[in-house]
Length: 193
Ligand SMILES: *[C@@H]1O[C@H](CO)[C@@H](O)[C@H](O)[C@H]1NC(C)=O
Image 1 (cartoon, rainbow, N blue to C red):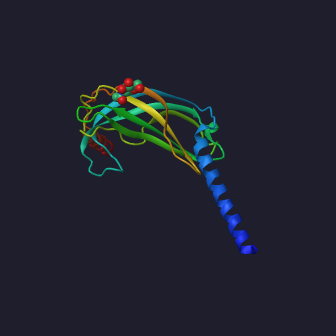
Image 2 (image 1 turned 90 degrees about the horizontal axis):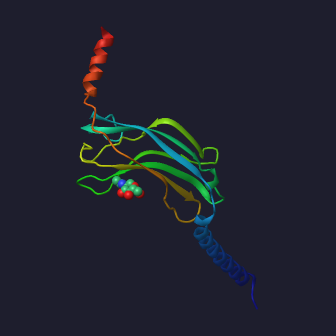
Image 3 (image 1 turned 180 degrees about the horizontal axis):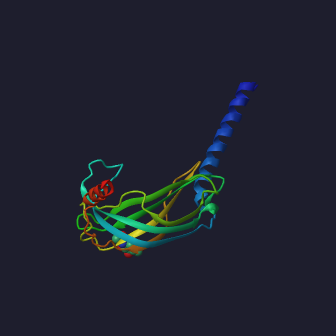
């Protein structure tokens, strides 16, 4: 009748189908595991200055307006960790509308959170990690902007999704007239004397 290999084969295929069904169930249900994260973002100031940006990701170093944000971030995301959470990717974007493009999104800060200990965030008077500037090198005509904290839970198994958790409106002022290159030269000269 049935030999050992036929039995093994049917057991393996049954195990495989069961695993498949489990994998599908896990990936479908993980986003619905309840969590109660807390978060708040406070923006202290927005400064706009014109100059050459020292940007490690852009070596063209064109003269441009760049905005410097000062913000506080308080968050406790530890409840978002469950057995199917590999890590959380938290990031803050600045979104604004300009004459040329209806949507501009600049990531100004991000962090990879690998465990519940790192999930308690408390940043004070923090500045943007990445340069905030417009495609057109100027923020002229940019009416308003939103600063939004996003959290992207990365599961071991299943789909990734983006959660916008808090958004605050702000506006970017016109730049303070200042040539940072000249000023640097001045202070250097001043020190030498
Ligand atoms: C900022 O957010 C508000 C509320 O969600 C929205 O109505 C507005 O269009 C947003 N502004 C920009 C520039 O994205």
